[in-house]
Image 1 (cartoon, rainbow, N blue to C red):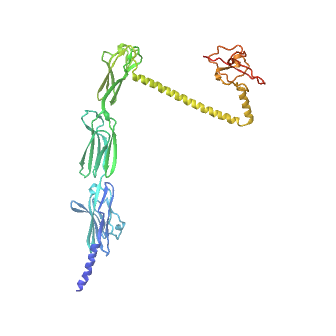
Image 2: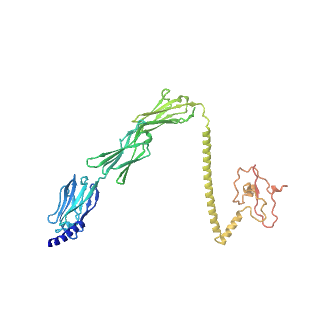
Image 3: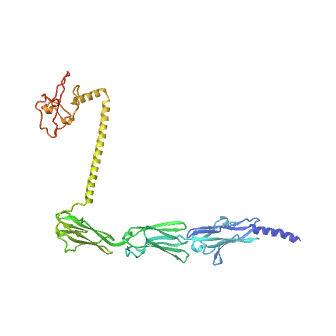
Length: 479
């Protein structure tokens, strides 16, 4: 009876330890090749206290357990091969002479793809027995991404034959990458995945399009997506094609005695043209024709001898292209077409508009400068009474038409008048504003004071007393 009395409390204690004590770990961890990762392991709720005899980390390999690291209070710490140089216990308390093993987290360095597995953290305790938990470790591998032209030189071919012009590769990645293309070209992509022995995947994508001169120098972009990260690379297409030739210079209006005529051979090619050749289908080239690289120059005036068919051959390493032109010679220049006449008139209108714009700008600038000078004179005139008096006297002496009783009812244009000095040869009369006489005056009256019957042809002395001022004499108006 006394035995059962002692056994029941012990069974209750064991039951409490079994249900309250546990090993706590992360459910899963991950890391990249070459990096490090922590695998956490803690013994939780050791009340009532238990004795930890040993902690063992194990790796599950093909259903079997492989020891990785061991912590024993008596024997110390041990890390086994092939983990010896790459695994260590994180908690310093584990390394003490009397270690504390409640936290036995380990750190993995220089991760390898082969490290991916399930790891068991096992606690051996007394009197509760063994407790363990498992963490799954996943290893990722960043891929090596490369984009290039499929071949250094792509030759334009048939319009119906598509070929690979660019290749994008994401090599040795885990998990595999996703490759897409960004381009305005009318092509298609072809993608394949290759599984490598170490568990990584190489993804290769080729872009197929019909090579032609139209897609030369076009941009092609490859976008590689890996674990929600994007990598972009691009190339410029280099398409080689044979020359496409045109001839310029003949405008359909080559006439006799016209000067400075020539024919120019223009070629679009990749690689560039290495040779230009001119041919005259009516025989040998005219004696007046001179070849200067891609230009055929005709020296001297146009004659009927240069009429005929001219062919230009342009050659590069891919092939030869040709173009021809039929030159005709007329006796007289051809009349301008309606379009040419309209263009000529339009050109004159544009030129006139430009001239008027420039003239208007010059006028406005001069007007602004004149206003500035006028304002400066007004400021100087208002500076002192003596200065105002001097300016007023100068202005009065220089004005031919001022003076009491000497204003006409209608004052003609001053340009239609000459001064009394010019009319009567009075050299001693000072006049400051007499305009030049253009054209030269052919008639002057001999007696400027002679009275006539008509009032518009003569002058009368003023009746007001006082000294007589100088008079101006109206000059003849030219019809």
